[in-house]
Image (cartoon, rainbow, N blue to C red; front, side, top):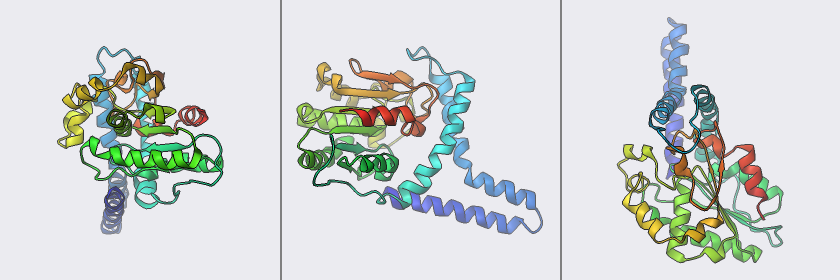
Length: 294
């Protein structure tokens, strides 16, 4: 579903930009260029609004407050990171890196869980590295894309079983954004902490996010600050279980803020400054440390 929708968006933007260019180019070449560029880079304006909201809402959060210069650098990085994920890998390359369950894998296997409005294509750079290391992995697709977060527990369960069977070891779960909450919901529902070696979350709204108030979907309400769903989830968890978690979070995450909502009490919380939401998923330190867990 997500791949088809993003294909439509990408092709629609390209067609609109080309039509604008062709219509204005003969008489108004400058307007043709500026208009086509605005159509293709309109997402950069939306990102800019998100960073303004982040700057306004940060408040007295425990994480160091990002300066205007840091937010500008993070915005620039996100403008570069988003197109490859949302206009190429996810819409057109979501199956370019198939799940890998070799007969004799090396090391622990990995289950990859994507976030909101994403699919398994998000993880293509990670999957290439895992395949090069001969490590078993399964990258899930969370469908339906806008459903209740609890509805994805069976998808995670199936992936964990596959990787565990291939390696004979408890896997590492690596999740981006909303995927971290899906993993927590699966752990709470199945009491499977003993079946998992570590859980790595990257930019996950463990405490909810201010941005969720702009959503009217079921899962959007679940990710709201102090939401009833998050309260019920936390009540069903044990504080000791958070010790399995490695949580990456940033003070320039334009989707998960205030920043400390990306951390968990008692977890190994790692702060990465000046890095936005999608870019955090491909930060060199985040990838290197997460894939080195054993």
